[in-house]
Image 1 (cartoon, rainbow, N blue to C red):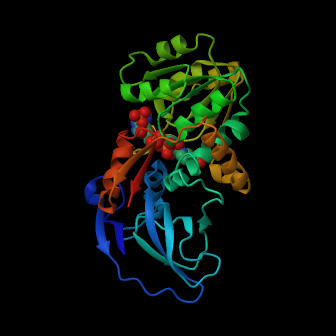
Image 2 (image 1 turned 30 degrees about the horizontal axis):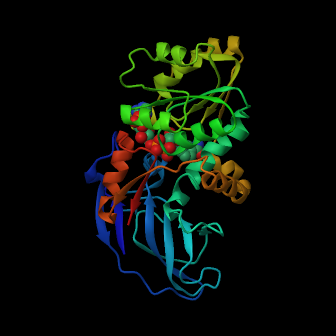
Image 3 (image 1 turned 45 degrees about the vertical axis):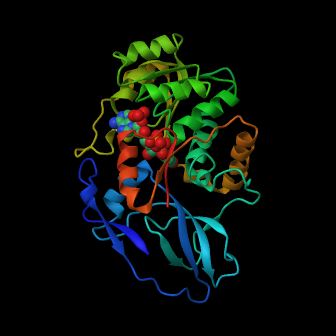
Length: 326
Ligand code: NDP
């Protein structure tokens, strides 16, 4: 098996030199075990965050993949089965089947299995749960989402449109803004070139925002919070603007605004609703088949390019879900 290991814990923005390609001899699968071969490997922001405290020097980098069972001594996972597996950045893995999630039954032939890491996978579920469980978004409301052209953000905006809402999105390039318009966002702007964020938010929705799906945190949120309507709701999904910071974030948060506008703000992790995943994935797939949901992807080819894909995603090079085709 080829693996990508961490040569040292990340400090600040991750570097190519933080990763090293290693070849590992794998044992034959024993009774109850399977041999997996990676087909698609996901690169996600949480890997930057979590690997800081859960991956040690020399460990294989964490991550999720769609893999195919190529040898099996486990009747639950016959040869040819595709699964979503959290086995990190590696081409081959021997495991006993614990934690493997088979791709949902009836996955359409014409839909790439890579979407099981994107719109019909963890990021899609994050979008759905943030909207329904945390925000309780209602028809006719106005929603703001940032990192809107990314894996989670692009699904957030599309689900909000399905629900009959007005959607405003912010993203880091003009190409991304054009993509958001294609998806049916009512307004979208490039936060890097917009000048005053406050003015951009006011222009996009002069009456303010009922809901804010926050993927970015930091100063963006300080400004966005001031544009909420009374009784506005905020789903704190991610805070990617601070993941590479070397000193802990201290604020400022506009607490007075929260009090006077009686804002409700809730952080969440999509795993909270794991019991609903099978049903939720079916709903996402339903929207995809009906043409109401697009699963745009940014695909990098080759296992040797996994670190580059990861760094590119952190730099904002991806439109849609960043995935590596092994
Ligand atoms: P994306 O596909 O959105 O990729 C990351 C994007 O973040 C980049 O493309 C870039 O887009 C943007 N970005 C990077 N750095 C900055 C910065 N300094 N300021 C503003 N934007 C930045 O990733 P995901 O959709 O997978 O994840 C989006 C967010 O959701 C992340 O914060 C992630 O941690 C969080 N998340 C949370 C989950 C949960 O359960 N709570 C589950 C999954 C994801 P741009 O060009 O627009 O800047």
